[in-house]
Length: 145
Image (cartoon, rainbow, N blue to C red; front, side, top):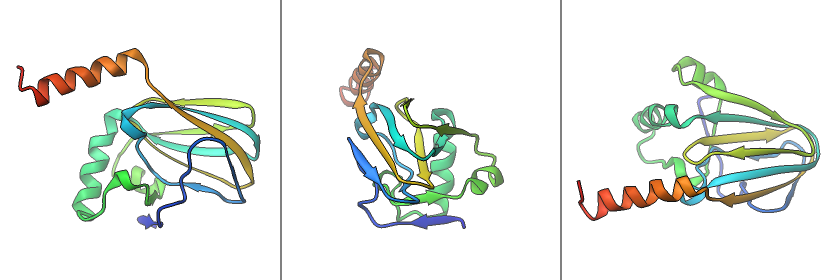
């Protein structure tokens, strides 16, 4: 498998239950926020996370092969063998019930389960992210150098 496109509607926010073999497609956190993911109960959730440092490399590779598809639309599931093949470094995380996983802004996570789960996700911002966003707006939109 190289790229797998799945219709919108698979990825949910907030408290949700997911049936057997739930898939959470690769996505970027909304508005560049951090995200807290609490795994209440159920089976293990497996995460593959492209770091901020590797994101540009992945996006460039993806756009070369799929220029009409936007990564931001939560429609793509990537086989981790693709990351290995193109030397894109990623993190593997296993999240068990009653564990919290905090995702930083700017990363590209995807995950899946083999069993039913009950999970909750909350988007939030750290002050440092607010400062980065403000700086970006000032430099890029107000043309201050």
